[in-house]
Amino acid sequence: MGTKGEGNRQRIVDAADNLFYRRGYNQTSFQDISDATGIPRGNFYYYFKTKDEILNAVVNSRVAGLTTILNQCEAETDDARERLLLFSNMLENRRDDVIQSGCPIGSLSSELAKDDTALHEVSRQAFVLLRDWLGLQFENLGLPNADDLAMDLLAKIQGVTVLACAFKDVGFVERSHREIKDWINAKTLN
Amino acid sequence: MGTKGEGNRQRIVDAADNLFYRRGYNQTSFQDISDATGIPRGNFYYYFKTKDEILNAVVNSRVAGLTTILNQCEAETDDARERLLLFSNMLENRRDDVIQSGCPIGSLSSELAKDDTALHEVSRQAFVLLRDWLGLQFENLGLPNADDLAMDLLAKIQGVTVLACAFKDVGFVERSHREIKDWINAKTLN
Image (tube, rainbow over all chains, first blue to last red; front, side, top):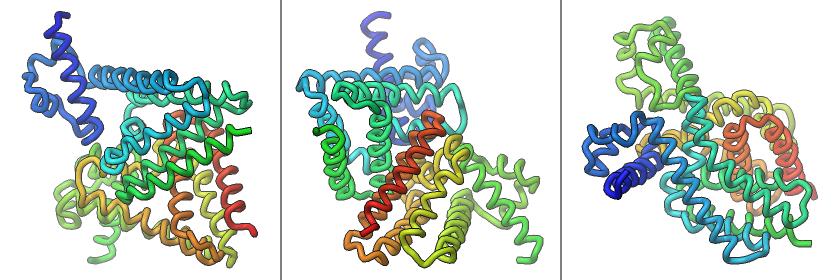
């Protein structure tokens, strides 16, 4: 694929990513993505034959974006506890998005649990990445139940996003973020 | 409305409730509800003019169902701490549903946050009921931050359902339920 083709492909993925987040996967049509990109629907088929293929590309793109964020946490400090705290900042860094539309990973997973097993498994990939990375940090701190702690931290963050979005409550995000940091410290400080 | 009309109306609401939970609100059509009930689509308009009206009826029905559960908790014990523990059992009582389709309240709220402010507010009503009731229990135990604790407990349960559904993990529900009961006891036992 040439540079222009690659550029078009990326524009489709970026627009779909945003629409899946803001409107939901099922509520996004090829036409919506065409309207958002200005790329005619007919040209889509050169890049993606089905909406499932676009979903795959969007999840891959989210996994890549999260990998960048995790790499930044790793570059910033060698201390696994500090890395966990940096990771938890995502909740507040994306606060306005969370209030408006929830968590992109959690809400996609919840939506796709409803209908299609194959699509649901695709959507899980971003959670798998985070679970593994968080588990590794807890493991590096010598904690025996590292994977449980990774699941607990993910569940805490998901719970906060669902309630913050339901009640449009900025203060709840801020308070919960403080309590999540306290929890990370309590679990990891000797 | 006569008895038959009331019966038909209730059948529509029950079928829609189940379909909204299993497939999602946006993925459920009038035709799906007609197929599930055997009531012809044309007859629907006698009971409901729009899908929004069905959503309203479904949320009212869920609020009524939850009110029954909360009343049962109240009937079973006068001890507010015991009531909170009984409430938390819902997570495990509905474990198989949670694994398959998430939380009916949380997933509807997350779905409707995506598009329509008015519908999102309707979907919030079940959360409001639970928040108020949980807050009242914490208040009865003399805790000053009762509403914060109610939000925290709801967020914990939501987080567990999102992750348990994403990973289809029964063991995670069981472990998390134990930890939620420990948390309730830690917050409420003097």
